[in-house]
Amino acid sequence: EAPEALVFDSARNRLVAIDLKHPEVKHWRTLVPESPEESHKLKAAFVADGKIMAHWSKAGSDGLSVYTLEGKHLHDVDIPEGSILQFN
Figure 1: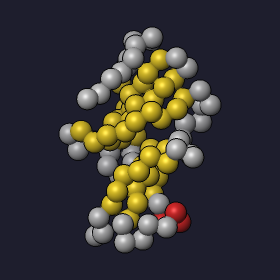
Figure 2: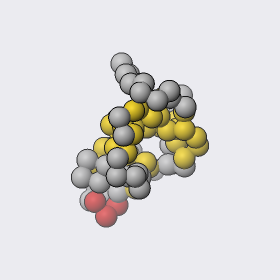
Figure 3: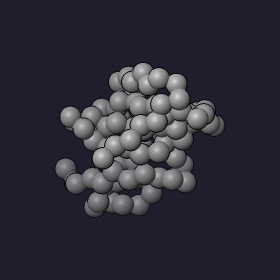
Figure 4: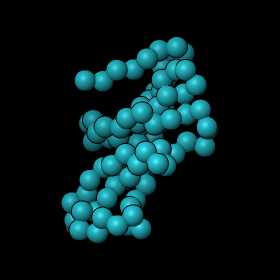
C-alpha cells in the first residue's frame, strides 16, 4: 500500500488523503467532508489515538468531531457554547 498524506483542502473546506504515488486530484480520498452548514468551517485536523480529530468553527463556537482513519464519522464531542478550542 502506498504511503498517504493527510491534506487540508481549503478550497473545499475538507480533509483529504493523497496517495503519494498518484497525487492527482482525481485520486484524492475525502476523509472529513465539508460541512453542509455554511457557517461550519474546518479549522484544523490531527490524528490522536489512531483517530482523526476535526476542529470546526461553528457560528461563533468551536466543535470537535471524531473520525476513523478511513473517514467514518464516529461522534461529536460536546463543547460548551462559546468555548474556544486550542491544541498544541
